[in-house]
Image 1 (cartoon, one colour):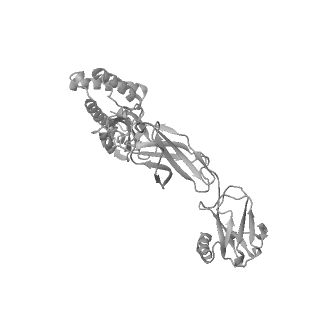
Image 2 (tube, rainbow, N blue to C red):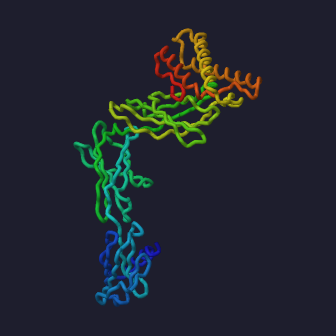
Image 3 (tube, rainbow, N blue to C red):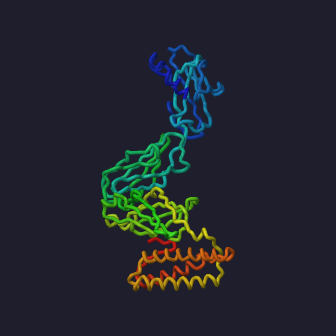
Length: 428
Protein backbone atom coordinates (compact mmCIF):
# COMPACT_ATOMS: atom_id res chain seq x y z
CA UNK A 1 0.00 0.00 0.00
CA UNK A 2 2.90 2.37 0.80
CA UNK A 3 4.52 1.61 -2.53
CA UNK A 4 1.22 2.26 -4.31
CA UNK A 5 0.91 5.65 -2.59
CA UNK A 6 4.54 6.33 -3.44
CA UNK A 7 3.81 5.60 -7.09
CA UNK A 8 0.70 7.79 -7.10
CA UNK A 9 2.61 10.68 -5.53
CA UNK A 10 5.60 10.66 -7.83
CA UNK A 11 4.41 9.57 -11.26
CA UNK A 12 2.20 12.66 -11.82
CA UNK A 13 5.14 14.90 -10.86
CA UNK A 14 7.49 13.20 -13.33
CA UNK A 15 4.94 13.25 -16.13
CA UNK A 16 4.09 16.89 -15.55
CA UNK A 17 7.73 17.96 -15.76
CA UNK A 18 8.36 16.09 -19.00
CA UNK A 19 6.14 14.30 -21.46
CA UNK A 20 6.78 10.52 -21.42
CA UNK A 21 10.39 10.93 -20.27
CA UNK A 22 10.46 7.26 -19.08
CA UNK A 23 8.35 4.19 -19.58
CA UNK A 24 8.15 0.44 -18.90
CA UNK A 25 7.42 -2.23 -21.46
CA UNK A 26 5.27 -4.29 -21.31
CA UNK A 27 2.82 -2.00 -19.57
CA UNK A 28 0.38 -3.66 -17.10
CA UNK A 29 0.75 -7.23 -18.41
CA UNK A 30 -1.47 -10.16 -17.36
CA UNK A 31 0.38 -13.45 -17.05
CA UNK A 32 -0.39 -16.98 -15.82
CA UNK A 33 1.09 -18.05 -12.51
CA UNK A 34 4.65 -19.37 -12.96
CA UNK A 35 5.44 -17.22 -15.98
CA UNK A 36 8.78 -15.50 -16.56
CA UNK A 37 8.67 -11.78 -17.29
CA UNK A 38 11.37 -9.55 -18.74
CA UNK A 39 10.48 -5.86 -18.43
CA UNK A 40 12.44 -2.92 -19.84
CA UNK A 41 12.69 0.61 -18.43
CA UNK A 42 13.57 3.18 -21.11
CA UNK A 43 14.49 6.77 -20.23
CA UNK A 44 14.81 9.84 -22.42
CA UNK A 45 18.39 11.05 -23.10
CA UNK A 46 17.17 14.47 -21.99
CA UNK A 47 17.12 13.22 -18.40
CA UNK A 48 20.89 12.73 -18.46
CA UNK A 49 20.62 9.34 -16.73
CA UNK A 50 22.65 6.24 -17.60
CA UNK A 51 20.82 2.89 -17.46
CA UNK A 52 23.44 1.48 -15.08
CA UNK A 53 22.38 4.00 -12.42
CA UNK A 54 18.75 2.84 -12.40
CA UNK A 55 17.21 0.13 -10.21
CA UNK A 56 13.92 -1.84 -9.93
CA UNK A 57 11.47 -2.56 -7.11
CA UNK A 58 8.47 -4.90 -6.83
CA UNK A 59 5.76 -4.08 -4.29
CA UNK A 60 8.17 -1.72 -2.49
CA UNK A 61 11.05 -4.21 -2.27
CA UNK A 62 14.25 -3.52 -4.24
CA UNK A 63 15.09 -6.25 -6.73
CA UNK A 64 18.66 -7.63 -6.82
CA UNK A 65 20.98 -6.16 -9.45
CA UNK A 66 21.83 -9.69 -10.61
CA UNK A 67 18.47 -9.75 -12.35
CA UNK A 68 19.25 -6.56 -14.37
CA UNK A 69 20.61 -6.24 -17.87
CA UNK A 70 21.84 -2.98 -19.39
CA UNK A 71 20.49 -3.05 -22.94
CA UNK A 72 21.71 0.45 -23.90
CA UNK A 73 22.74 3.66 -22.18
CA UNK A 74 19.03 4.51 -21.81
CA UNK A 75 17.45 1.05 -21.30
CA UNK A 76 17.60 -1.31 -18.30
CA UNK A 77 15.74 -4.63 -18.17
CA UNK A 78 14.86 -6.95 -15.31
CA UNK A 79 13.95 -10.64 -15.49
CA UNK A 80 11.47 -12.18 -13.02
CA UNK A 81 11.27 -15.98 -13.27
CA UNK A 82 8.45 -18.17 -11.86
CA UNK A 83 6.10 -15.36 -10.93
CA UNK A 84 3.76 -16.20 -8.03
CA UNK A 85 0.10 -15.13 -7.89
CA UNK A 86 -0.54 -11.43 -7.43
CA UNK A 87 -0.76 -10.38 -3.80
CA UNK A 88 -3.62 -8.01 -4.54
CA UNK A 89 -6.33 -7.99 -7.19
CA UNK A 90 -5.32 -4.49 -8.28
CA UNK A 91 -1.98 -5.94 -9.45
CA UNK A 92 1.61 -6.00 -8.19
CA UNK A 93 3.62 -2.78 -8.56
CA UNK A 94 6.78 -3.01 -10.67
CA UNK A 95 8.63 0.34 -10.54
CA UNK A 96 11.74 1.78 -12.22
CA UNK A 97 13.77 4.27 -10.09
CA UNK A 98 16.70 6.64 -10.67
CA UNK A 99 19.78 6.38 -8.47
CA UNK A 100 18.20 8.68 -5.88
CA UNK A 101 15.12 6.47 -5.55
CA UNK A 102 12.70 8.72 -7.41
CA UNK A 103 10.06 6.95 -9.47
CA UNK A 104 10.60 7.14 -13.22
CA UNK A 105 7.88 4.75 -14.42
CA UNK A 106 5.62 2.02 -13.11
CA UNK A 107 3.66 -1.00 -14.32
CA UNK A 108 1.06 -3.25 -12.71
CA UNK A 109 1.57 -7.00 -13.01
CA UNK A 110 -1.56 -9.18 -13.01
CA UNK A 111 -0.46 -12.71 -12.24
CA UNK A 112 -3.20 -15.28 -11.87
CA UNK A 113 -5.33 -17.82 -13.68
CA UNK A 114 -8.06 -17.67 -16.31
CA UNK A 115 -11.58 -18.27 -14.97
CA UNK A 116 -13.11 -21.73 -14.89
CA UNK A 117 -16.69 -22.42 -15.98
CA UNK A 118 -19.12 -21.29 -13.23
CA UNK A 119 -21.19 -24.10 -11.71
CA UNK A 120 -24.31 -24.74 -9.59
CA UNK A 121 -26.42 -21.99 -11.13
CA UNK A 122 -29.80 -21.88 -9.37
CA UNK A 123 -32.59 -19.31 -9.43
CA UNK A 124 -35.76 -18.63 -7.48
CA UNK A 125 -38.58 -16.11 -7.55
CA UNK A 126 -40.11 -14.60 -4.43
CA UNK A 127 -43.84 -14.38 -5.02
CA UNK A 128 -43.40 -14.44 -8.87
CA UNK A 129 -42.46 -10.76 -8.90
CA UNK A 130 -38.68 -11.04 -9.20
CA UNK A 131 -35.82 -13.47 -9.78
CA UNK A 132 -32.63 -14.10 -7.81
CA UNK A 133 -29.85 -16.32 -9.14
CA UNK A 134 -26.80 -17.70 -7.40
CA UNK A 135 -23.81 -19.68 -8.65
CA UNK A 136 -20.36 -20.85 -7.63
CA UNK A 137 -17.03 -20.17 -9.38
CA UNK A 138 -15.55 -23.21 -11.05
CA UNK A 139 -12.43 -25.04 -9.95
CA UNK A 140 -10.88 -23.78 -6.73
CA UNK A 141 -12.67 -20.45 -7.21
CA UNK A 142 -9.62 -18.20 -6.79
CA UNK A 143 -8.09 -16.63 -9.89
CA UNK A 144 -5.92 -14.09 -7.95
CA UNK A 145 -6.83 -11.31 -10.35
CA UNK A 146 -10.06 -9.36 -10.78
CA UNK A 147 -12.67 -11.56 -12.46
CA UNK A 148 -16.03 -10.25 -13.60
CA UNK A 149 -19.13 -12.46 -13.43
CA UNK A 150 -22.11 -11.48 -15.58
CA UNK A 151 -25.54 -13.11 -15.34
CA UNK A 152 -27.31 -13.11 -18.71
CA UNK A 153 -30.82 -14.19 -19.63
CA UNK A 154 -33.30 -14.15 -22.48
CA UNK A 155 -36.63 -15.61 -23.44
CA UNK A 156 -36.07 -19.05 -24.90
CA UNK A 157 -37.65 -18.61 -28.33
CA UNK A 158 -37.48 -14.89 -28.86
CA UNK A 159 -36.28 -11.70 -27.26
CA UNK A 160 -32.90 -10.12 -26.96
CA UNK A 161 -30.14 -11.05 -24.57
CA UNK A 162 -30.19 -9.05 -21.35
CA UNK A 163 -27.80 -8.63 -18.43
CA UNK A 164 -28.63 -8.64 -14.75
CA UNK A 165 -27.58 -5.37 -13.16
CA UNK A 166 -28.16 -5.65 -9.40
CA UNK A 167 -25.26 -7.56 -7.88
CA UNK A 168 -24.92 -8.03 -4.15
CA UNK A 169 -21.52 -7.02 -2.77
CA UNK A 170 -22.14 -9.13 0.33
CA UNK A 171 -22.82 -12.17 -1.86
CA UNK A 172 -20.41 -11.88 -4.80
CA UNK A 173 -21.82 -14.78 -6.79
CA UNK A 174 -25.46 -13.71 -7.03
CA UNK A 175 -27.63 -11.26 -8.91
CA UNK A 176 -31.16 -9.90 -8.54
CA UNK A 177 -33.67 -9.12 -11.31
CA UNK A 178 -36.40 -7.01 -9.68
CA UNK A 179 -39.00 -6.57 -12.43
CA UNK A 180 -40.14 -6.98 -16.04
CA UNK A 181 -40.28 -10.77 -16.02
CA UNK A 182 -42.60 -12.71 -18.31
CA UNK A 183 -44.80 -15.55 -17.08
CA UNK A 184 -45.78 -18.76 -18.91
CA UNK A 185 -42.63 -18.47 -21.04
CA UNK A 186 -39.33 -20.21 -20.28
CA UNK A 187 -36.11 -18.28 -19.84
CA UNK A 188 -32.56 -19.31 -20.72
CA UNK A 189 -30.09 -18.17 -18.06
CA UNK A 190 -26.32 -18.46 -17.85
CA UNK A 191 -23.22 -16.83 -16.29
CA UNK A 192 -20.10 -15.55 -18.04
CA UNK A 193 -16.80 -15.15 -16.18
CA UNK A 194 -14.05 -12.96 -17.69
CA UNK A 195 -10.67 -11.60 -16.69
CA UNK A 196 -7.49 -10.51 -18.48
CA UNK A 197 -6.43 -14.11 -19.03
CA UNK A 198 -9.61 -15.46 -20.60
CA UNK A 199 -13.30 -16.22 -20.19
CA UNK A 200 -15.62 -19.11 -19.37
CA UNK A 201 -19.38 -19.67 -19.61
CA UNK A 202 -21.60 -21.78 -17.37
CA UNK A 203 -24.11 -24.31 -18.62
CA UNK A 204 -27.38 -22.74 -19.73
CA UNK A 205 -30.39 -23.51 -17.52
CA UNK A 206 -33.97 -23.24 -18.73
CA UNK A 207 -36.75 -22.39 -16.32
CA UNK A 208 -40.25 -20.98 -16.06
CA UNK A 209 -40.71 -18.38 -13.32
CA UNK A 210 -43.81 -20.23 -12.11
CA UNK A 211 -41.73 -23.36 -11.41
CA UNK A 212 -39.21 -21.70 -9.09
CA UNK A 213 -41.45 -19.68 -6.77
CA UNK A 214 -40.85 -19.42 -3.05
CA UNK A 215 -42.62 -17.31 -0.43
CA UNK A 216 -41.95 -15.54 2.79
CA UNK A 217 -42.11 -17.79 5.87
CA UNK A 218 -45.52 -18.22 7.54
CA UNK A 219 -46.29 -15.41 9.95
CA UNK A 220 -47.89 -15.14 13.40
CA UNK A 221 -46.74 -18.61 14.49
CA UNK A 222 -48.12 -19.42 17.93
CA UNK A 223 -47.73 -22.49 20.11
CA UNK A 224 -50.04 -23.19 23.04
CA UNK A 225 -51.07 -25.95 25.40
CA UNK A 226 -54.11 -28.15 24.77
CA UNK A 227 -55.94 -27.81 28.06
CA UNK A 228 -54.37 -30.04 30.69
CA UNK A 229 -53.02 -32.60 28.22
CA UNK A 230 -49.44 -33.00 29.29
CA UNK A 231 -48.11 -34.44 26.00
CA UNK A 232 -49.85 -32.13 23.48
CA UNK A 233 -49.16 -28.71 21.99
CA UNK A 234 -51.23 -26.80 19.44
CA UNK A 235 -49.48 -24.88 16.63
CA UNK A 236 -51.17 -22.17 14.57
CA UNK A 237 -49.91 -19.79 11.90
CA UNK A 238 -50.98 -17.48 9.09
CA UNK A 239 -50.31 -17.97 5.41
CA UNK A 240 -47.66 -15.69 3.85
CA UNK A 241 -49.32 -12.43 2.75
CA UNK A 242 -48.37 -12.98 -0.88
CA UNK A 243 -50.58 -16.08 -1.07
CA UNK A 244 -53.59 -13.80 -1.10
CA UNK A 245 -52.48 -12.23 -4.39
CA UNK A 246 -52.06 -15.37 -6.48
CA UNK A 247 -54.11 -18.38 -7.44
CA UNK A 248 -52.24 -21.10 -5.64
CA UNK A 249 -52.34 -23.10 -2.46
CA UNK A 250 -49.53 -23.99 -0.13
CA UNK A 251 -48.32 -26.95 1.84
CA UNK A 252 -46.56 -26.60 5.15
CA UNK A 253 -43.86 -28.32 7.12
CA UNK A 254 -43.33 -28.16 10.87
CA UNK A 255 -40.22 -28.97 12.82
CA UNK A 256 -39.75 -28.94 16.57
CA UNK A 257 -37.06 -29.75 19.12
CA UNK A 258 -36.45 -29.88 22.82
CA UNK A 259 -34.98 -26.81 24.46
CA UNK A 260 -31.76 -28.65 25.35
CA UNK A 261 -31.43 -30.55 22.05
CA UNK A 262 -30.23 -29.31 18.66
CA UNK A 263 -31.87 -32.13 16.67
CA UNK A 264 -35.09 -31.16 14.91
CA UNK A 265 -37.98 -33.53 14.25
CA UNK A 266 -39.69 -32.70 10.95
CA UNK A 267 -43.37 -33.35 10.20
CA UNK A 268 -43.99 -33.58 6.45
CA UNK A 269 -47.70 -34.40 6.34
CA UNK A 270 -49.21 -31.15 7.58
CA UNK A 271 -50.88 -30.44 4.21
CA UNK A 272 -52.37 -27.04 3.45
CA UNK A 273 -54.01 -26.37 6.81
CA UNK A 274 -52.79 -23.57 9.07
CA UNK A 275 -52.92 -25.41 12.39
CA UNK A 276 -51.51 -28.61 13.73
CA UNK A 277 -51.54 -30.74 16.89
CA UNK A 278 -48.25 -32.10 18.22
CA UNK A 279 -48.81 -35.21 20.33
CA UNK A 280 -46.64 -37.71 22.18
CA UNK A 281 -44.48 -34.97 23.65
CA UNK A 282 -42.53 -35.04 26.88
CA UNK A 283 -44.46 -33.54 29.83
CA UNK A 284 -43.07 -30.46 31.56
CA UNK A 285 -40.72 -29.67 28.68
CA UNK A 286 -39.99 -26.56 26.61
CA UNK A 287 -40.24 -27.06 22.84
CA UNK A 288 -39.16 -24.79 20.01
CA UNK A 289 -41.33 -24.88 16.88
CA UNK A 290 -40.83 -23.54 13.33
CA UNK A 291 -43.01 -23.60 10.21
CA UNK A 292 -42.19 -23.16 6.52
CA UNK A 293 -44.22 -22.96 3.32
CA UNK A 294 -44.08 -24.40 -0.19
CA UNK A 295 -46.39 -22.92 -2.88
CA UNK A 296 -48.18 -25.53 -4.98
CA UNK A 297 -50.01 -25.27 -8.31
CA UNK A 298 -49.20 -21.65 -9.11
CA UNK A 299 -51.45 -20.65 -12.00
CA UNK A 300 -51.77 -24.33 -12.90
CA UNK A 301 -48.06 -25.23 -12.72
CA UNK A 302 -47.58 -28.94 -12.13
CA UNK A 303 -44.36 -28.48 -10.18
CA UNK A 304 -44.05 -27.79 -6.50
CA UNK A 305 -42.38 -24.55 -5.58
CA UNK A 306 -39.33 -24.00 -3.41
CA UNK A 307 -39.53 -24.23 0.37
CA UNK A 308 -39.42 -20.89 2.13
CA UNK A 309 -37.07 -20.13 4.98
CA UNK A 310 -38.16 -21.41 8.39
CA UNK A 311 -40.15 -19.02 10.55
CA UNK A 312 -38.53 -17.60 13.66
CA UNK A 313 -38.56 -20.18 16.50
CA UNK A 314 -41.56 -20.03 18.82
CA UNK A 315 -41.34 -21.65 22.25
CA UNK A 316 -43.92 -23.22 24.56
CA UNK A 317 -43.89 -25.81 27.33
CA UNK A 318 -46.08 -28.84 27.94
CA UNK A 319 -47.85 -29.11 31.33
CA UNK A 320 -45.82 -30.71 34.07
CA UNK A 321 -46.81 -34.28 34.85
CA UNK A 322 -47.93 -34.89 38.45
CA UNK A 323 -47.59 -38.61 37.84
CA UNK A 324 -43.86 -38.17 37.39
CA UNK A 325 -43.69 -36.32 40.71
CA UNK A 326 -45.37 -39.19 42.60
CA UNK A 327 -42.87 -41.79 41.46
CA UNK A 328 -42.87 -44.53 38.81
CA UNK A 329 -41.63 -48.07 38.30
CA UNK A 330 -41.41 -50.55 35.46
CA UNK A 331 -44.52 -52.66 34.90
CA UNK A 332 -44.32 -56.38 34.57
CA UNK A 333 -45.89 -58.03 31.53
CA UNK A 334 -48.92 -59.26 33.43
CA UNK A 335 -49.48 -55.87 35.05
CA UNK A 336 -49.26 -54.18 31.66
CA UNK A 337 -51.87 -56.43 30.06
CA UNK A 338 -54.14 -56.07 33.05
CA UNK A 339 -53.78 -52.30 32.93
CA UNK A 340 -54.46 -52.29 29.17
CA UNK A 341 -57.67 -54.29 29.56
CA UNK A 342 -58.77 -52.08 32.43
CA UNK A 343 -58.15 -48.84 30.48
CA UNK A 344 -59.87 -50.18 27.38
CA UNK A 345 -62.88 -51.09 29.50
CA UNK A 346 -62.79 -47.63 31.04
CA UNK A 347 -62.54 -45.97 27.62
CA UNK A 348 -65.44 -47.81 26.00
CA UNK A 349 -67.55 -47.37 29.13
CA UNK A 350 -66.79 -43.69 29.09
CA UNK A 351 -67.70 -43.49 25.39
CA UNK A 352 -71.11 -45.09 26.03
CA UNK A 353 -71.81 -42.55 28.77
CA UNK A 354 -70.61 -39.48 26.89
CA UNK A 355 -70.66 -40.04 23.09
CA UNK A 356 -74.29 -41.21 22.74
CA UNK A 357 -73.37 -43.10 19.61
CA UNK A 358 -70.44 -43.00 17.22
CA UNK A 359 -71.66 -39.82 15.53
CA UNK A 360 -70.78 -37.80 18.61
CA UNK A 361 -67.12 -38.86 18.66
CA UNK A 362 -64.54 -36.12 17.92
CA UNK A 363 -61.00 -35.11 18.79
CA UNK A 364 -62.41 -32.92 21.56
CA UNK A 365 -64.11 -35.98 23.03
CA UNK A 366 -60.83 -37.84 22.88
CA UNK A 367 -59.08 -34.95 24.61
CA UNK A 368 -61.71 -35.04 27.35
CA UNK A 369 -61.11 -38.75 27.87
CA UNK A 370 -57.34 -38.19 28.02
CA UNK A 371 -57.81 -35.58 30.75
CA UNK A 372 -60.13 -37.97 32.62
CA UNK A 373 -57.49 -40.71 32.37
CA UNK A 374 -54.76 -38.40 33.68
CA UNK A 375 -56.86 -37.54 36.71
CA UNK A 376 -57.54 -41.25 37.22
CA UNK A 377 -53.83 -41.98 37.17
CA UNK A 378 -53.12 -39.18 39.63
CA UNK A 379 -55.74 -40.55 42.04
CA UNK A 380 -54.45 -44.11 41.68
CA UNK A 381 -50.86 -43.04 42.28
CA UNK A 382 -51.81 -41.05 45.38
CA UNK A 383 -53.75 -44.00 46.84
CA UNK A 384 -50.83 -46.32 46.16
CA UNK A 385 -48.44 -43.87 47.81
CA UNK A 386 -50.58 -43.69 50.92
CA UNK A 387 -50.87 -47.51 51.23
CA UNK A 388 -47.20 -48.30 50.80
CA UNK A 389 -44.19 -46.23 49.74
CA UNK A 390 -42.40 -49.41 48.66
CA UNK A 391 -45.18 -50.70 46.42
CA UNK A 392 -46.36 -47.88 44.14
CA UNK A 393 -49.30 -48.55 41.82
CA UNK A 394 -48.23 -46.03 39.20
CA UNK A 395 -46.88 -47.48 36.00
CA UNK A 396 -45.18 -46.31 32.83
CA UNK A 397 -47.30 -46.11 29.72
CA UNK A 398 -44.47 -46.87 27.29
CA UNK A 399 -45.31 -50.58 26.87
CA UNK A 400 -49.05 -50.53 26.33
CA UNK A 401 -49.83 -46.97 25.16
CA UNK A 402 -49.04 -47.86 21.54
CA UNK A 403 -51.45 -50.81 21.64
CA UNK A 404 -54.15 -48.79 23.36
CA UNK A 405 -53.73 -45.90 20.94
CA UNK A 406 -53.93 -48.22 17.92
CA UNK A 407 -57.18 -49.75 19.15
CA UNK A 408 -58.66 -46.32 19.92
CA UNK A 409 -57.69 -45.06 16.46
CA UNK A 410 -59.34 -48.06 14.80
CA UNK A 411 -62.50 -47.54 16.85
CA UNK A 412 -62.72 -43.82 16.13
CA UNK A 413 -61.86 -44.28 12.44
CA UNK A 414 -64.59 -46.86 12.01
CA UNK A 415 -67.07 -44.54 13.75
CA UNK A 416 -66.19 -41.34 11.94
CA UNK A 417 -64.50 -42.61 8.77
CA UNK A 418 -62.04 -39.78 9.12
CA UNK A 419 -58.28 -40.05 8.67
CA UNK A 420 -57.47 -36.81 10.39
CA UNK A 421 -57.91 -38.30 13.88
CA UNK A 422 -54.25 -38.39 14.90
CA UNK A 423 -52.52 -39.16 18.16
CA UNK A 424 -49.14 -40.19 19.46
CA UNK A 425 -46.89 -37.87 17.50
CA UNK A 426 -49.03 -37.17 14.39
CA UNK A 427 -50.62 -33.77 13.66
CA UNK A 428 -54.23 -32.81 13.53
